[in-house]
Length: 260
Image (tube, rainbow, N blue to C red; front, side):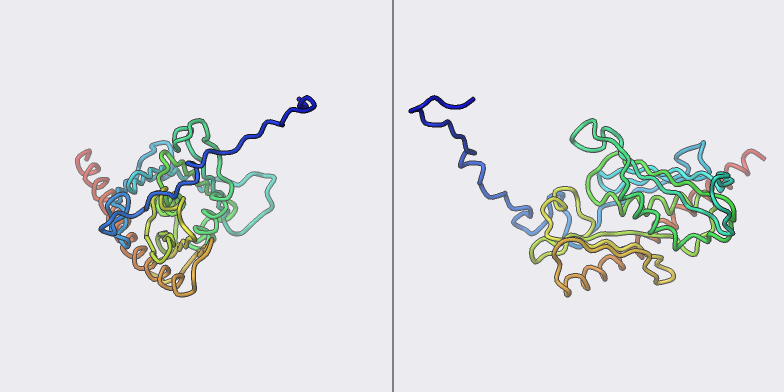
C-alpha cells in the first residue's frame, strides 16, 4: 500500500546480531566436530544380503550416513531399446523423506544417479551380459555427509553380491578443503563450510581411477595432496569391502552345510 503524503515510508533491515561470525568449526586441539583427526575416516559398517528380493544388495553405515543399495538383473532389456552386444547399466539414487533434517524432501537425485553410473560403468564387464540390463537402486536412509562416496562404495559391494562380473571392486572417498586444512570423509557440517572438495572413485587393485570430481576452490598442491589421501583411503576401504564379501560367503557356506 502506498504511504500517505507527508509520512515517511516504512523500512526494515536485519538485526545487527545476524551478522555475527560463525563459531570455529574445529576444536582447540585441532580435532573435528565428531572428534576425528583431519586424516581419519569414520568407522564403516558393511553388510551384504540386506534385501532378500534383490539379485544382490548391501547396506553401508559410515558414521551417521546410512545407505542401502539393491541390484536387480541382469534381465532382458526392454524391446524399445536398440540391440546392444554389451549389457546396460541403469542407476538411480534417491533419498528417503527422513534422510535429512528437513522432513519431506525425499526424492530422486538425478546428478548423483548420473555420477554413480559413471563411477561403476568402467568397472563392470558389460560384455558378460549382452542384450540385458542391470538395475542399481541406491537409497540414502540418513544423510550425514559424504553421501555420494558411500553410495558408490555400497553399490559396488551390492554388484559383487549379485555376482555381476567386475574388473575390481570400486571404492570412493572424498576430502573437503577448509582453509589451509584438508579433511577426509567430511560430515555435513564440514561440507557446508568447505571452500572446495575432491572426490575420487577407483579400482584399487588395478590402480585405476574411474571418476575424479573437483569442486570449489582448491590449490594445485591441495588437489595433489587430496588425491593421495583419497587413494590411500580407497585401498584400505576396498580391503574392508573384500572382508565383508568373504564373511558373507563363509556364512552362506556354513548355512548350506547345516542344511545338508
